[in-house]
Length: 309
Image (cartoon, rainbow, N blue to C red; front, side):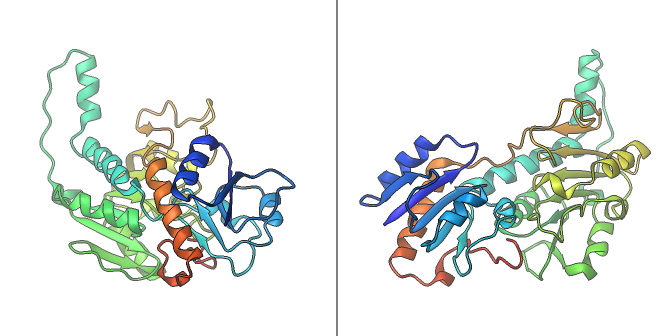
């Protein structure tokens, strides 16, 4: 069994060492132009030249949950694309989102500013019932986030492309359910995959549908947000602010207004980092299963190429 590794902006050696330990007997190599075709590919944002050179692939394994970079390529027909379905990312995402929601709800930014000015201040407690949290995207990560927020007694709503049921979460689905979902949300959390249908979905029209004084948390992809629309709605007062972990251009350019806007919190795409050991174990297990003849439908994380996730 031959496995090739092609992950841009990634320190390859620890991954190669881990994959070799997890797949003893397999030939694990870092891809270079001219290399022999492999049986399986482990990738992150590979170039088209890599894909074109792989004429014998039985599976493509992405080292992240988001596959939008792969969906931009011409992929070989009939070859399954497999994403990480958790690998320690969902608990990180739940931590990050709960922190951002609670920080906004409890007005910790305002307290922090008062402390910096030497002021001992109080604010009237807010009611959780007045801050329903809407989670866009109810996949593995989105469901974990929604259930974590329920533990803090926030009303939680969820929206997904197709109908889903999550205990204790009011679920909406499809185009017909989107406006009602937004109109019922005061804090909006985006966990959608980036596809042609969801690109720029966080635009003026949709953000205006949110309850007045709404707050946005984007931990999905920067392409979901129309930057100018978000800034305009914050400056107008319709939105109270935003916590943003992902951006259209990364790293975020130094001149971008998000850096210094007083009502926007910026973090460097760190809401849920890939945990190498957990990811290697998951990918190796799936490669072994597929190589051993397991049905594709039994492999968790198979990407629907038509949907893009």
